[in-house]
Image (cartoon, rainbow, N blue to C red; front, side, top):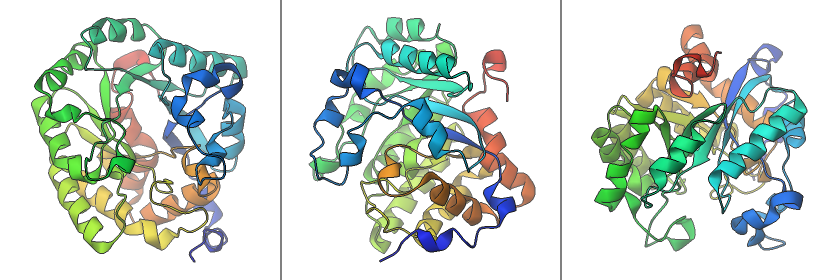
Length: 323
């Protein structure tokens, strides 16, 4: 059994204290808005994901990050079922009430299968800190348990064409796909060269075997050739392919190093995916592991990767966000 406990004592303080921007976390208040999160309600008690069946408020997030020197954060939509603007307003309100300034930016939801998506995006763009959208695209008919949708959206020409509105509004699109979809994601990015795309969770490498790694690397190689695509070093403890406590720094190393080699430090950024990844490990243990793995980068590359790359990724839009 691999545990994360042995990795903590060998992390020098100067490494652990490196400042990072967390480019991907979620918040939800199940007491106030529980009916909005059908996917959380559907989680079975006693299952691996059962810890997610509780509110995760900004105060909880701040407690998780307190020893990791997180200086800014980005909230990503979390499956809110009704008007996506209401989820963003909830996050903004949480930030204002806290006074901590986090989250510093928002990625909301948009459904590009709807004709009304443009109007929704225009309204969403008026909210402070709103920088882009995500629509879950995970689709594999041979692995229904990994699919987030019953439709292969990237095979739908009208869906793909509707993404063009993002360029007009200066908004980015988050790619939440499976390794088998990386080639399709590459075609989508090539179709829209003026849109910034951000790959979530290293492309969700659910098959952690050598064969799975080789197939993932092939897709990542293709996707990384699009200069308008960035990659989140995140989802490293995702319950989709991790057991609580049974992970190691050595186990995650090849995925991180390969992604950085392919995308370059300038197009990679750190992200936690908390509280989802919290099911399998602590924030500090995960963040320290990532910091140690990327240390062999030169100092300049390291700074770009864990702090500065985010300027070109999440905040390329002038005065909207100053880092």
